[in-house]
Length: 258
Figure (cartoon, one colour):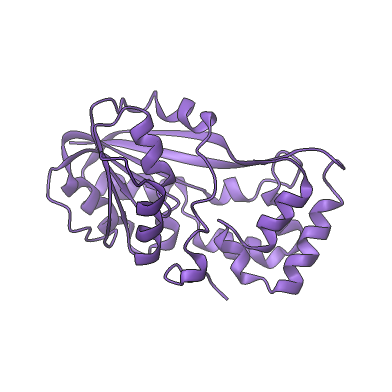
């Protein structure tokens, strides 16, 4: 079983949280979005499109291949005149050439087979000197052991086959950097961030999201019975009757169109 991004049942899966300050603190030194035009490719529910606007971007265009995701993002950001969403492919967005200053791609490339085509499209969209920001997890990021600070690691401790799936689909830094270079990006930088995914008042709220597979495509590889087993497994390892702060480690690559 894999996630169907086009299914109406999954349309809110990537829209039910807020972007946290730890992400902002890492991104701001990489690029100044104030008065800039941003393309958020693979925008999902539009969370980061809104975050770029909140950081001062003049205009944000979110692009996703799923009509359901575009519908949700539009709904969630209604009334914000400087954010628009459209359906399009990451390899052929349909946006005009040299129309944006920043291209942002978060949790996108591990779903793609052709990084070069994705980054060439990003370069096409950017003005000269524009900046690409690519965020994903590497095999090293996902293989970190489980702990209350890295709950996702418990997924793989409980079901080792999920780690095989993750390692197979996640890009190495070398692969990403080489593809960016071939696609016309220079001045490459790489940073890591422990990004807070979501805060829960208690384990029950976390477990409800977990059982709903909310925002976690890897969990679509588990049956409902296995999800219940995973919730029990994690519940035995987290402090009882305490808030849950779910964080994941990400790698962020950035490069300037030359």
